[in-house]
Image (cartoon, rainbow, N blue to C red; front, side, top):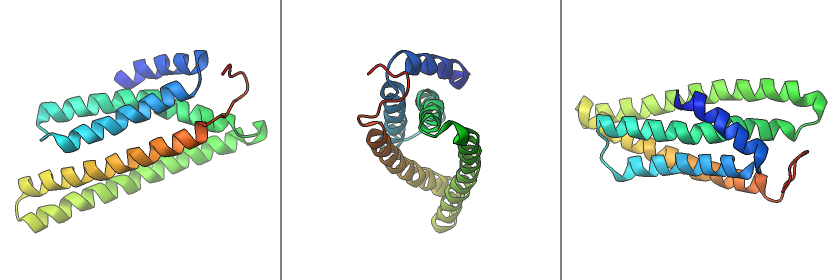
Length: 154
């Protein structure tokens, strides 16, 4: 529900301001959630809060990154760009889940305990995701630097 409501709000912000505001703020929120997950021992309530904050960041960034990216293509290639975007999203999600679950599984075997291995696996996954978020913020800052799209009033 958070994503459904806030994606609309983020789209309005994107339309009324510059693409930078919702995209960069969303990516920063995502990065901060993974940083917080690394700094604090997660409990069930903490994981729920982390996930909710992650969804806030995702709502602000994901659809707006897609909109901005597709707006950079010539009109005749937008449909192809959308297809590529959706395909890469599906494959990257599958690869990410496979890597994440492999890390947890490996650490469960190494620790000799499902609980201990799961905690270590989560910690490593959150650390990897934090670095991915920092890399994503860097890419977005580079892509959005001094770029003006059609209809943008910067």
